[in-house]
Image 1 (tube, rainbow, N blue to C red):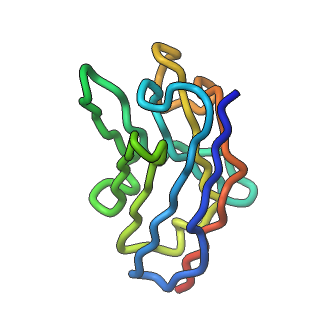
Image 2 (image 1 turned 180 degrees about the vertical axis):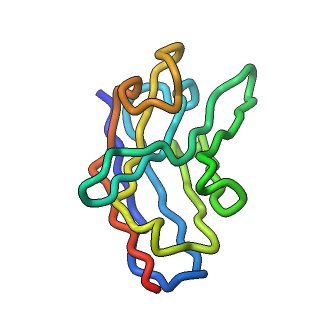
Image 3 (image 1 turned 180 degrees about the horizontal axis):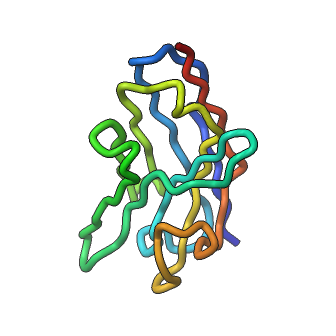
Length: 128
């Protein structure tokens, strides 16, 4: 059973930066697509970023348009950890951020329904 634990959320002023982390245990971490999603109060869970295996030790990153150029997803397979570096934060980035793991060939990495493993979420609040 794969377990995901997020950390690093918090309160930051607009324009600031924050890095959230997700540590995985169990499973074969290096083979999973790892994604970040976020959910604001009263809204659906939205795709933020994903890092997808593509060949031997090669990964591709994908981003939602709303965060492209500001957020960076990365992973350290030796530590079974995925990161989301968030820069130039805006109040509209305020949400609970969830880490998710997707088994190989499970479908679109943009859709939360294709991910099998989820963390408990970490709150990110950006003040104006």
